[in-house]
Image (cartoon, rainbow, N blue to C red; front, side, top):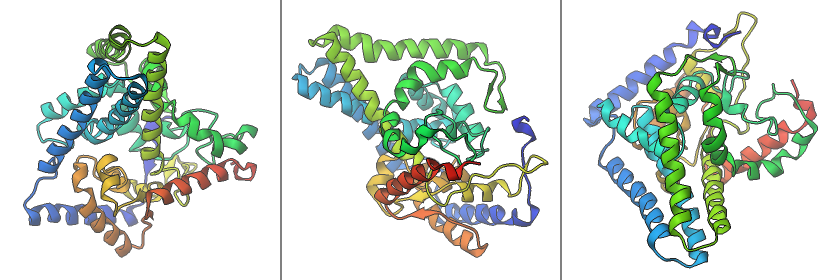
Length: 363
């Protein structure tokens, strides 16, 4: 079974997405604004890059105490996560500027931050956004056998404790990404059931070139310039990644791995019996829509349904679009998963992990 054979089929409900797109287009026309970055987005880009670069320079050249150096490592990890979700994510989706060169340049921040934009584009833009929550296709729900993220995954006895230890594993997400996952996926012939083409020659260069830059900037230079024992620097580096990985997990997992979202499987004809857009409504959730701080720091990914349906619209426009989407979903009697608060989303994710850790939910 190959991913290209999966089709989303249901002509009866395809009208929803057409109506939604027309209403969203009308919103931008009536407001006379672009769906790409505005002045607020420019401010966010400057703010988060300043936080990232400032934390790094203070760490390297600020002659800080040991305690403060650890705090700066943690700040560096958090700002790396924020740059990733606020700038790089939109850029790789082509949502910051109509000019693809601008998106490409800002997308390179993703590589400089230790991840590989080419692999991310495949696993996230192409696979996850198409086959959301579909077992054996969406790699985001098959990251490790230690965490059961779907009712269709094999149950293991250790899963009964996953609602305790998963939060710790989340802290190793970015560390694995930087040192293991990118390399493994780059040289794979397929990810889950998605067949991969051989990467272009220049992508091999990009992979090793930017990884070398990352290791130099975040490991070698601190070992040279910081006046602490090498093991303090390694611990600081690990602390940076723990907070970065944990923050990324909180932002992303709350959108797909919570109560009430679905995990559809193809029928015997390898079809998903919903249109792609309605599939996104069933498998994705919004959270903390009325909290401006969450939206600011999380790159608008708390408006996750809007992001999945309109990937090329900059996240600063997600809030007003969410009202249009919610109204349109109601008009067509479709689900709209909306968790009011961040704490509520975290609690729902915890309950989801507990449910997946019960043998009775094995498929």
